Image 1 (tube, rainbow, N blue to C red):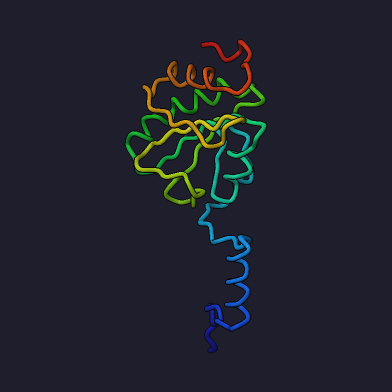
Image 2: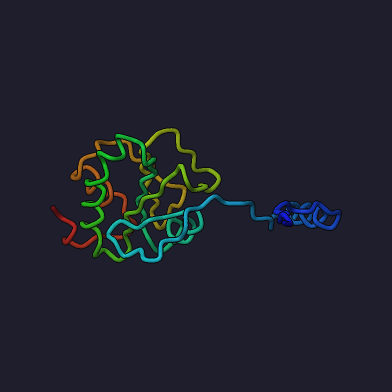
Length: 159
């Protein structure tokens, strides 16, 4: 039985193309990513490596992201609160509450996660992000979103 060769053949042309793309800034490196969700209709949007830029860096949306690890006890404790936060802002068209498994997806350059969960708010007008370091209760999280949103949020988001 013939074995399939799954290795990339290194050729001069491939090396030249790689070098040129790197110099041009057009080479896109491999990104580890979970599969893109078939449906992303829940109050908390699931972000994966392949959708990070289109969801989080959308300049029309304020996006609050939980960077979590599935094995993390603090993340598990935050999960129901994060779900409630998503429900509160579900009807605010310019606010997205999202989460990404930071252990299974490549994150963009400049986003360094040192512990779990890490919460970063990306306002529509500041995609550098604002790290959230306050209490992880629903009222504090909701107040933070209301305070840092790029546009006013309707009274529906009051508790």
